Amino acid sequence: MRFKAMVVLTLALLAPWAAAAQQAYVPIEQRLTPAQLREVGLSPAQLETLNRLLRETPAQDTAAAPTPAPAAAREEAAAQHESAELGGQPIRSRLKGSVDGWEPGTVFELENGQQWKVLKGSMKLRKPLDAPEIVVVPGLAGRWFLQVDEDMPKARVYRID
Image (cartoon, rainbow, N blue to C red):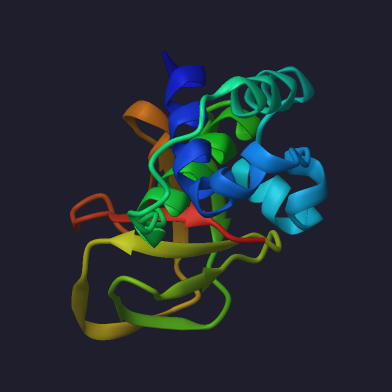
């Protein structure tokens, strides 16, 4: 199931190149930068399968402009890949600096060197906390949540470093 979701997401990300691929197919590894390949997070076997599927896909109606996948979908894929890499274990550390709240886009830097970006959730603290201890906890379906205090709402985050 997860493999199929990654293939569908990757196909959506690569839709702009689909028409050109029908004339002279170029493997995905040659179309994307190394950073983009890491962001997609496919294994060599998954890349091989995706390349085969794209090579074998019949030409589609090219009159309609392809719609790129939204940033949230790309971030979700990165978060799910991150969850698999980290083994789903909570991460305990301390924030560098102080925090007075968060909203989507806020970046948290931890003392262990990791950086986590808020995808969903917002909170304004009554007073700033200086270098609080935090826990980044795994959720369902590869989601991660940053917990500043167990009595406060968590921020949905994904790792960016």
